Amino acid sequence: MYVGKVVGSVVCTVKDENLKGVKLLVVQKIDNGKPKELIISADGTRQAGKGDFVYLIGSKEACLPFRELKMIPVDSSIVGFIDRINEI
Image 1: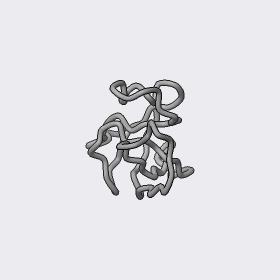
Image 2: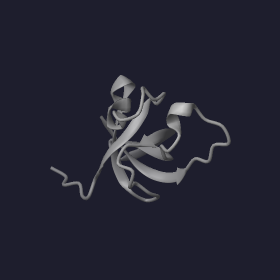
Image 3: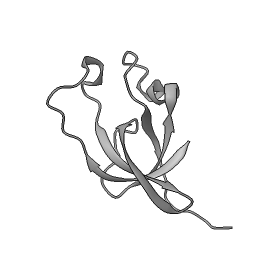
Image 4: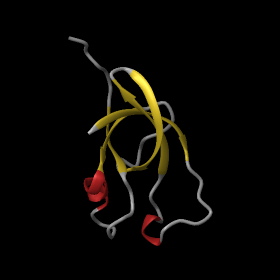
């Protein structure tokens, strides 16, 4: 599981048949409070948008939020929102 910030969306002219109806977003991964690489992630919440802080899952588990669909070809999926972070 990792943290990121939604910075944009993806427009596809052609995509896998199983991805139809799935919103793809560009997320800037955040590691130890510092921005890292950009990744394309499927929106498992179906509500995320630009500027939202989110947490993501990766690997094979990334397709779990889309159980009603077939196995979709994604490496990461947004599964929740981060409202606030309390530093220790």
